Image 1 (spheres, rainbow, N blue to C red):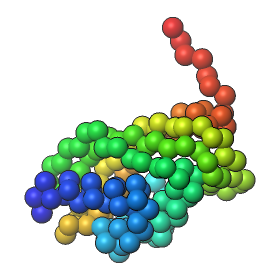
Image 2: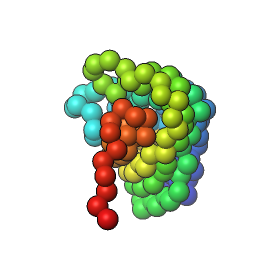
Image 3: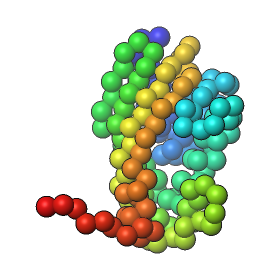
Length: 147
């Protein structure tokens, strides 16, 4: 598949799945055996991603991902994005109690690397600034920065 087509697939996926909350985009755009390399081996990536999207959209009803830069080479698409939203619902980040709504707005940097196979996402490597998000909603103290 051409790099441009891979990039467009990613843009469509991010818009539909995260920005609009359309969970059918997960099944349409990811292979059945897709792998999230931040999750334990054997985890069901599609099911997990639907939970993540639902959880983020519950915590941040106005959730939006803006893609700033995108590069592709063969079957790999890399992109930098910013997640924004207002913390109006409970935020679950794993085991333990949810973080109650703070009413605070967030702007969180993300980096994604997706391997595409047959026009569908097969592998994901992803990093995001979770610490910054937790500081922005008041769940962690803001650390002072060196001058």
